Image (cartoon, rainbow, N blue to C red):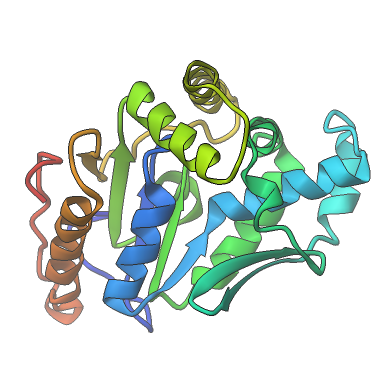
Length: 250
């Protein structure tokens, strides 16, 4: 938890789910939001959408002045349509285009840049200010919402995450190999953990969950139990919330 005392936002908890690429954060965040009746804010999709726009416009990521000007006018929206989230960037539906291996690597590169991070940081904080939200990413619990009432760090082995991503890409008709997909996951991990600005790391008060050998339903049940326990705490009496010390005992 963010602290021993729960400080509820107006519409409910702010729930942060961090972790490496391919750990299942987006899927779990979506299901957790549904289970709790919360809004999901897919921050990874937001960064991917920015990466797509930068690539589409041919902007040099090393030109920080041009990047800052461009980011100041970016409009990223997360919309629900027929039960599915659509990512709209500057009026374009880019939901499918942002999920390619090329965009994954591009996202890791641009998400480490100051102008991009500042624009997305402000947008995400506005979206989650009133609570009742589930956000997933790589620095939600450490940078975006360091005082989030509930923080999870969801991980899995690189081999397992690569296998999941490989199956996902095959289902979309992409021509990829398992070896290349695992290598892409490993490269993304290295980039995310070594970048200077907001590197991937687990918040000291986050609950660690390894999903390598757990089903989505098992992960979800563990998270729901923690969230419900936290939401039942009474902030007026400064009730303390016990935090599990083991990711397998949420």
